[in-house]
Image (cartoon, rainbow, N blue to C red; front, top):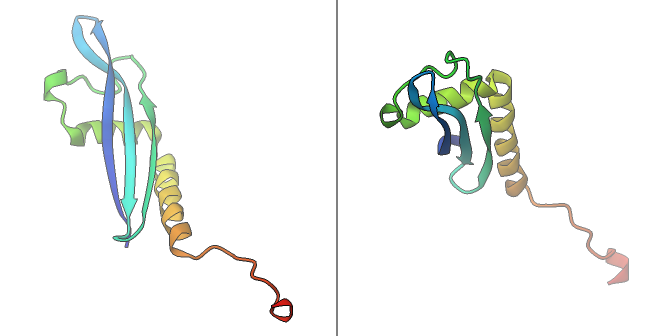
Length: 109
């Protein structure tokens, strides 16, 4: 079983926007996965429309990790979230399956 852990490593803010301070306009996210033995990872940026509807304004000091992850996933969309989670699962699978090798032919040994 693979465990996915989403994280946020940075948030970019507009210092002031329509009387709001530190309005988040982009997040830098990470996705780390493990099956207990092998690991996979991905990272990227989620940007937001600054229309003040996405993400919902929350004072910067009150933003939780969980809320920021929801914003990042919503920005990516269900299909891209699934794509990234499959990509890290594929990384783990590739590590758990021995690579193809090309040993010498037995009659040449």
